[in-house]
Image (cartoon, rainbow, N blue to C red; front, side, top):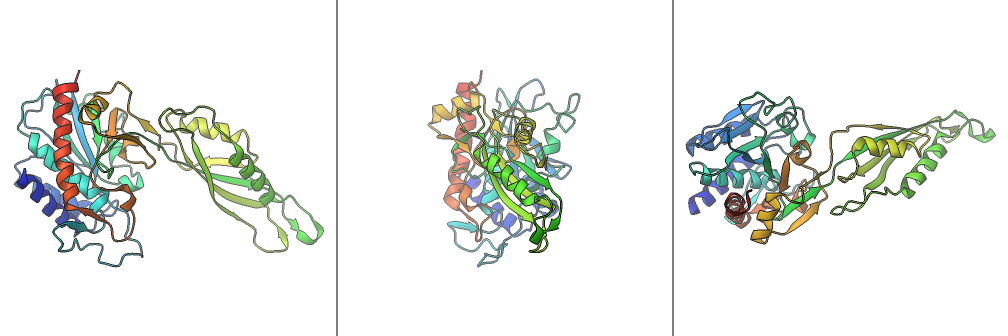
Length: 364
């Protein structure tokens, strides 16, 4: 176990040194493939994603997948240290992607390595994906799509269960909100402000914003509560003396599993004069089914469950899943990102215990 711990910490330090922005993951993929080869684990690359299966993989058995992402957001201007320097402190790994999502990547590799030769009633699969931070077309969005890697008739069947690795402090998220962004466009008629001519598009938009602010969705999720909605941007006008004929505003919505994104757009459009256009309808909310063996394993081990406010690869995965990984979500996308070495060690141990409990005691 000590070898798994220390190998993982050193691999994460290597990964941090390699820039791996979304769409630019090739070098970190090569690094991880080299590490897996050194560990005696065959793997393959599919559209820039890494996939590996346990030695005794049997297509007749159901599969549990361990899924984490390899890409990072850009380093922001607040960094006070080199974002690609993991530092020399043995207890802390600094750097861009160390917490989100490097900690989950190396911990899942270690857990997979632990079970690689084991004879289990299930298959174990490792999927390390790209483009998660930008919801790109070649990452989990392709892997788990109906016509993706796990499509009918392909070499691998769709996993039955997935553990999505994200920094949750090894708590198990049993749901996560989706993301729906709407562009509102109000159309008026320009005119001279001094004479009060025209139709003010800004006023149309403000009336719609007031309606959106007052609106309540009636279907309440038992785990996530209400759909959340906020207007976050507005833009109108070119001069102080011209009535604006156009106004643009942006609505940030965090759906629950009680509504599809299409339903939300239809409901909001019915109360607005402005035209509402969704940027993307794919970022749906997710929830673990109540009778899931994943939740039974969590209860057996006393793992805390919660509802996550952030999105992940989970929104691309149409099978039973939970989100769980080492690190703290509050450090993600912030300057001077870091993860503790002890969090990596505990993450590895808890993944192993969770998988053992999952297939040994709760799998039905």
